[in-house]
Length: 397
Image (cartoon, rainbow, N blue to C red; front, side, top):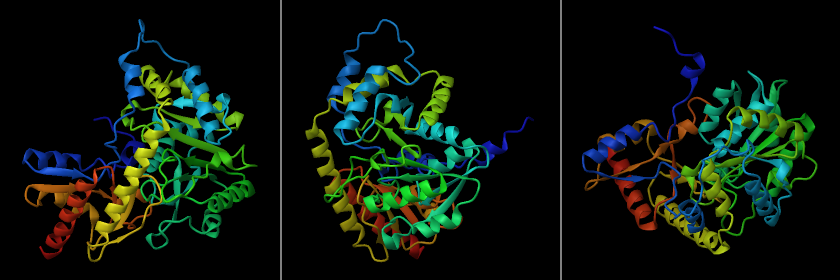
């Protein structure tokens, strides 16, 4: 029998999606499952985007330009400029989700066995993208004790080798919800300039900041125009995860010319989704004001409820819509599966994402879970109530 590739064997499972079969079984039993495991907002997609699809008048569903529709890139550039980011049309290539943008970034800047330093815990698919690109992830650990703040720059410097090509951050962070300060971003900027590295910033949660904190973009940092690569997406901003539209952004012309070759190889991003994404740029500010207020209230509700459970430690997120919670259990993978397979409270259970999959260091995060607060407050309160009873039952079995 022909054998699959070593790369295929090394591709990690999604810690978010690998438990889906168990949730399906739980639902077939008649159990209600509260999904705390995945960042799929329940916020309605802006009407202006949905109407653009409903009212489209197309006779032929054509390819777009490999970089995406010029009209979309032009409006997107203006959107960024209006938000204080000096981004021109030439700095943007539209991609099939932020995921493809990250693959383009890695493919354009790194060769097989090159290294990329990432503060962990990090978005689990960074492991998969790195494996697919033949790149080695070198983790630098942030901790729940500091709220997952940027690790000391000295910790980064110790890890830099001749193979190091880039530092990758998610700001605000998935899965931690941490928002890097301007001072932390400037420290990273100095580091990448000193060692001639790329600084790749995944900024898909840029709008989701709370408590008056300001997001400081990699594109706002003077002097690192040749080092900076920004990753963006419509998925969370407009609650359009299924559109699969993102972009890679950089002032580095060589990076963008190289990324364009990858873009040409996959031909073009999807037409209908670009139409919706372009229309979404007309979304009124009132939409975002309401969404941010809702997420802030959900965050406050979730953190308050989690803090009522004895033995639970949770970092208060400053942005995005995730948090990492440390639970008084031995193994979050086993616990998460048990919740779906063997536990219910009056016919209800919860689905969480084991956090070990958000680390690349073996043995770290085994008793942690990522929780997405994308459910309404009543459901979050009920979910934590179930979680509290489940922890007690799990530890006494």
